[in-house]
Length: 112
Length: 415
Image 1: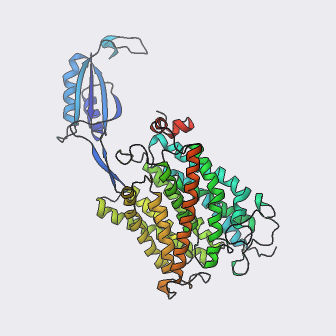
Image 2 (image 1 turned 90 degrees about the horizontal axis):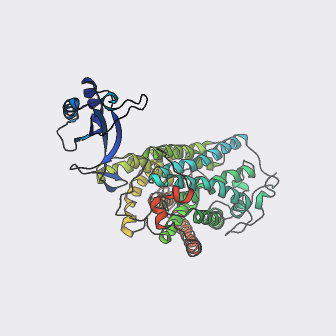
Image 3 (image 1 turned 180 degrees about the horizontal axis):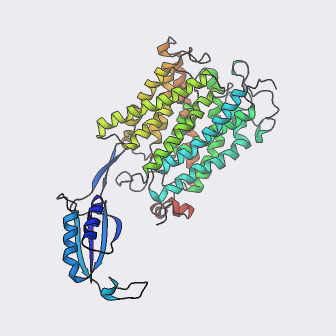
């Protein structure tokens, strides 16, 4: 079992969701986050005063899948979230030690 | 009773009283949207609190100090706790051409709403760092020492500036110059927010600010057109002037903003409208609609350019009370000396462009300077005394945590 975490542009969320559903992903957790990478921030102007806003809004997706699905999921996110411009985000994959479905108590790949 | 009640006037001023009261929560949201989320309740509460404290003080002594007696400099205690207000024949000075068509109790209630919003305007300059207890003492003292005195000078027919012939239809000097001067005095003692101007302190909820502007604009019809104290053509003229000036000021602000900063912004549109409403306040019942258009346009442009003052002189006027209210109030009061027209209001005077020469302009300048000097001077001394005794400012840590938690043990937005 692996945890796939992706940071994407907020307006790409629907495309990513549709791509993941199309390959049979059964659950996604989404959060609104802020951060910066190589894109840096942007400037905003309030009453003539310019401010640098370092942290720009992004969406973080967390998806737990069985090992066999990892490559397909990563590819789906990569192709659906890309605009080709700086600030498209990142995807990373980490191992999971244990997973439990709370309702039934199932563990391991049954709980994915 | 020596006065003749006009039921139309009574109905309109009753409604106007409610409209003007509604401006204070409107102001709370106008300002509340512009502060950071950790200070929004502090801002809302300071404004709402004025509705509580100033009301009590106005009934106790404020109204009497503003409209009692025949002295030119200050009222007296004849109407303290509204004694005799329902039986008095007429309010001092309100005779002949100035005779009221509404009962004195209604006049008192209507003026009370002005007394509430005026100190509330100061909260925009002191945002994010004024201790709540110090705020309560500051506006409490201010609502007794400063506001009634200035209202007496300018609004009461016995006031020395009124007798000089200075005009102020609805409070350009009494409300806006007065509050703006006081705001400047307090922030000179209070000092800038930590991190200003290096750190970004962007508004946390501009939709609130737009909502607040809608309430202010709506309420301002009561503020300006209600100041006719009658339901007649003059009230209608004041209402139309108010609206037109807000509209043209919005355009004036956005035009200069677009040219200078590159974008027409939401905050710019609403700030411009408020600047126009401020500038038309002294003029509303004395000028033609075409003059109101020009006054608004000038207010939008000049108030925008005045935003640079705070960086130039290094005072942290957090939400631009100086640029919008002090400069807007001064501009309106002085332009009245230019555009005032006796064909609009026979109780007024003709300004520079209407054959009156510079006489009225001189009187407007005198009133503006006198109100500025008095409000600034007294407020400065009061602020120093509060600062030396109880302290004006929250501690460094309290400021970092925000007023909501440190002053009120509350949080506006729960996860």
